[in-house]
Length: 323
Image (cartoon, rainbow, N blue to C red; front, side, top):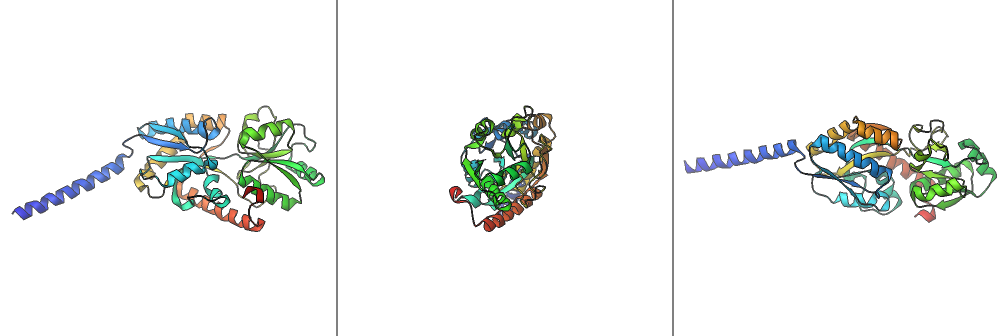
């Protein structure tokens, strides 16, 4: 009888633990969460993240604290996230370029399959831009014709990815460009606006000049034409077989439980329908809000990595000053 009672007690305890574990997964989250931004405070990713955190707080019923971990174009934040073990209570909100091209352009402690991509919520609006009243006008065709006739036409670069793209374009078009490295949009904008540089890459800085017209867009690096600059063709429309489209996505370590990922995804989908998030994204930083589920984001990023690898092979690697 004692043995039977003991066995019954053990089984009851095991069932209770199992039920508690299920309840805990169903109740996620049960404590505050941390949203990590891999860039400094004040940039468009940070501005968007802080509104997103407010919306997620309402959806998840727990505080969502925003922490900035800048460095290596978002790579520092991902390196730390890869080793995180808190089952989804810490997640990164960032750009897909960090995970697709970052490990190809420099040595990293993480790779694409070290994370789960909970959902995409915004499409990036990167572009090739110029300034007002340039000799070649404000069209991509005009710029290419001018650059062919004027060796040393200057280009402001910010990232290893845009450096690779312009290297590919220069080879395709037979251009001899002068490359001018800059430190982010804040470094690029004065050179473009003053005319010290002919054209350059912009990750989003140009959106601040949509009304004034001081920074015309020559070429969209998004999959579609830009929301605020619909006259500029895409890379594909201009004849370049490159998919450089960026997605702003929420990432967690690969071993986060499915139930936790599903709950975060549910909250993110609701965020893409929230007026607060739509307003800051579409009206302030001029990027389209869209919900992209985990499987679609994951496949898109994997396809981009393969495309970048092929392009790097065609170019013989990164340009020397970017390696």
